[in-house]
Image 1 (cartoon, rainbow, N blue to C red):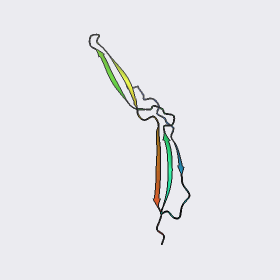
Image 2 (tube, rainbow, N blue to C red):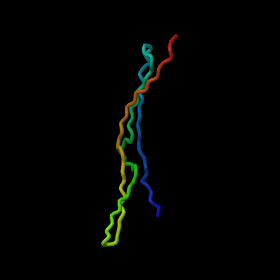
Image 3 (cartoon, rainbow, N blue to C red):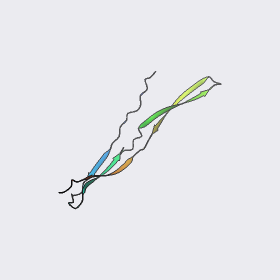
Image 4 (cartoon, helix red, strand yellow):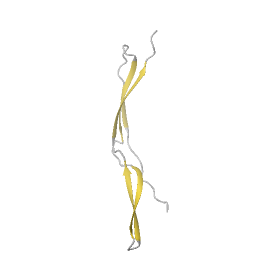
Amino acid sequence: RNSARLPDYHRLDLSATFTPKPDSEKRFTSSWAFSIYNVYSRQNPFFIYYDLQSDPAAGSAQATAYKVSLFPVIPSVTWNFSWKGRKE
């Protein structure tokens, strides 16, 4: 009883950041980040639910576990910027 365990959870995330050369004309600096979450698309369980199938005539019941996973691979693109200080 209570000896069941969830499967191992693991994933591989990759990210690269591109920062353009600073431009004195612009009033801000920026960078782009490109990411991929769960690169090898592992179906990690988000939760597990149980369904009980019973047969009243036979007087038996069987529980079946179902694993529910979310999002296999998630790409992401992010633009970061910050304002430069005022020139006096």
